[in-house]
Length: 50
Image: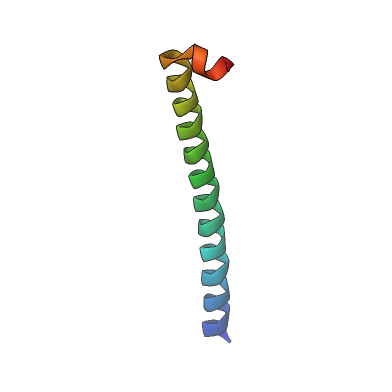
């Protein structure tokens, strides 16, 4: 019984780690996207307007 409980806790911990990691990846990708948009805006505003 104790061994099964430990495995259950391990799975819950893994799930939390995966969720947190997923959120961090999304946040990181968003930051990159925003930085790329800013670079494009600073390089050529005429291209964005058209």
